[in-house]
Length: 199
Image (tube, rainbow, N blue to C red; front, side):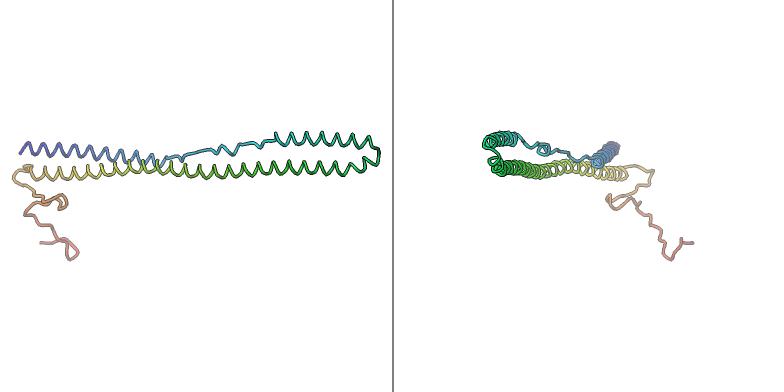
């Protein structure tokens, strides 16, 4: 009987340790969840500069063409200059329109790349956050199970010990942990009628 009592007390102690450890792990998991920082990712496409290499070459070619046409017009006299000015201006306008369209296309392509990058980053962030939060939730749930198993073990160990302990002739009988401890032969006092029994 002493061995069984010792075993019940040792089991109760182990269960108490499991309960304390479960509560500690649960608190740590809750703290990790409360202090969780969302994943931060940067979009590399946002900092892409527009290329002006092609437009610079177009401007240089246009300036050369204008200079050549101006020289030709000057050598032909006033009439040539007056006739060449609209052509020179039209050529310069075409080049400027082409440059504007090229830069606009580059900007549109960059905006599209930024939008696609933002979409990919959002999916990656959500996936990583979900994985991290699920891992923390799993830790919390495992700690909660350890805590509950520990409490159940403490209650079972105390019940086992109570059933085997010698209380000097008074031995409480416990049929299960859920039934509670109630000594055999002792009836609970009823409080019907709104007060304590008088006699």
